[in-house]
Length: 429
Image 1 (spheres, rainbow, N blue to C red):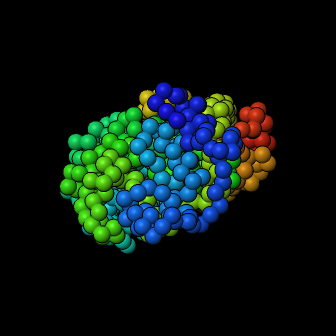
Image 2 (image 1 turned 90 degrees about the vertical axis):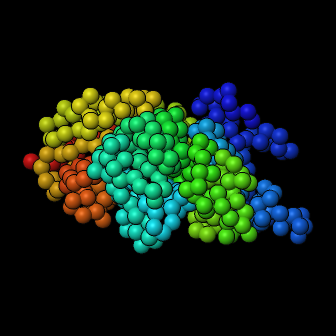
Image 3 (image 1 turned 180 degrees about the vertical axis):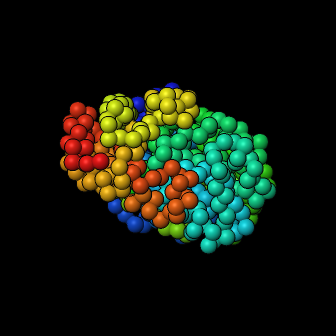
């Protein structure tokens, strides 16, 4: 379908649909196959040398997943997308497609705990240095960029502090330094709340497990290529140079502005094997059809619950970008269409023990490590998502023993407020 003239709410339903299918089916079929028949040996050879598009093996491509990727690319306005098995897989494949031993990336201090450990531990063992900026200011990032920097990396809304960086300033810095700007846009809800490509990003990664799926029923990640970076600038010989894995094929010469997303597929998925199942891709497609409706209600409920918490005597502080008191309030107004995402944090009065008592007293809100679900989730980062961080890194990330991250679901907000009220009544200070 021609996507250019349609709005997000239309694309989330129609993009990727094959309306000419002989069956006339309204929905996209699940293709549960591992492999595909070749027309001839010559046909197979053309597929494997990348001179002809087509299906080889579901680790690389699948018709159901391809429809899902087309829909995501349309929502973001990118030149291509790649579905992978998890949000962490999207970060790993994207970074390894950019950097190799001896290179570095410069990253925000406000990162999801799993991403932080990937950058500081696993990538270090592979010879890739991660330089964590002391803040999200462009000046602090600029001081860490050198000739071996292969990416500037931020989250469009930090996890769990909800810090929103100045995406436009960082995009301008990346352009001036001629370095790809990579944004984890999980909190941006597939571009509905925030589209980093509008502000200079070159690559977007996204945990589809969250708002894209929306119901906590499948794991997945997405990489989206904006098609707006010059891969022929001499900095990425693995993209604009002879490929060892494809008999010297130059991906940039062969695929132009889609060279990066092609590399992620033909090298990343081929070698790392982190592909989604066709059924999971189908669940993501179903989730996308109602994404805008779900997110609107969740954000509206977030305002109500955050206001309730701000006025509660047992709450020390509320960190919600919708409030003027939040340091990222102005950035959230600029970069997020509704002025916030559906997540906020609260810091309770009392101790670690009283905080645990509150969490374990909740009946409706679930105690899980999840965001973007149809169920409201309360997470204690210090004992879950950021458990592996040391004391100094926890402080830098804004994680304290009494901090709770709250992700709004689709329940009636008055029922959620009642659940919080009864949980607070169980806590003695």
